[in-house]
Length: 474
Image (tube, rainbow, N blue to C red; front, side):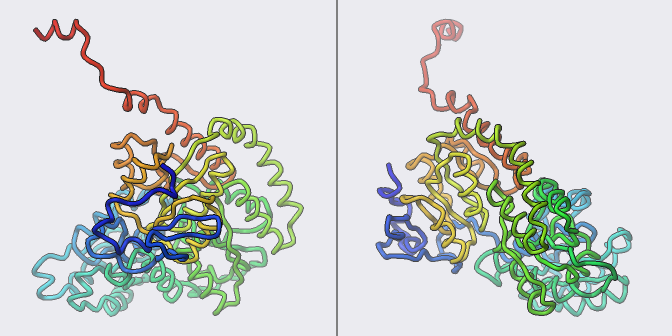
């Protein structure tokens, strides 16, 4: 079955999903409802749709605020919200403090009835006393505490005076947005208002940059930070992978913001440009051509073009033989990629560099500009789906039959049950995948998934038991 012929049977009783599905045609795209462009996105989930989206709290706590390594990450809400976010993205910081501990006010029925402000203040003070090395406390509001009217911002002000360290309150209750994307915005805005510019260190920052929108999944930063430093620039702040609070406070001193994730972090780059005049460039740190272009664009800003070309030439020489090996193995292979937002369009180019054809692409919380990039990159006939649900994913895997599915933790088990090779592109089972060296690891893991002998056994027709087994049974 081709993607042009494909129709979701599971959506027969949910016609509202049609505007969220489109196929790239030779003259543009055609939605599942027969209309022309453009695919519907960043709108409230239709009731009855088994969405895989996260909430605003998840985007703020799990993506933007969570990687900050030297603060106490405190959830103001029920235990379930904290448990969901615990270890959500491992190895985002060099230490394992956030893997060992999770902090929560543990709101119960009594607190909901009588209010939780006193409990929140007590929790902040107790946690700060228990872990005196922490440089501050990040407090994340949830649906229940917002609905009862707790004034967490006032509590944070009082707590700051009591513990002598910044207590940052994020108004990221889950119901505020249509997806976790709203949490990214809230996280950016809150950190910018509460921390950025609060210290003004002296020194030469004429060649200082911030890496904005990278969250150090499985130490992604180790693949590209040395290249930028070799280029001759100083990395002042990471936003927010493996970052410390004091670095966030001084990130306004950078001469340039290098923005990797356009969906989660362009907000703070734009705010810094408005207030401090800090320019920013959009880059992609996944894929050979993209990381090379990121180095070139950064080098051009500082007049370091010759250094960039030397680094790129050397790194290409290291990996090209290995990449060519995988290109030969991937000829004719097709991939379905489903990621949170920009990584879907980042990786279509990566797959093309590896010789893989992207037959379907989807995002959980992509906006219109994300889908514009997807449609620009995917080949004619490619299926594009906004916010797919599990029944839709199952139909894509069983009807279109991609050779490999690249997605996240939740989708892994669906793929395995259906016998489809899978690579975790969300938190990585191995990795890192960024930079030149990460491209080789990415290709290796795709090859291991596709080539695993388990699929031959899984798809083999069942055979009758040997006569010896039958005799033994008698």
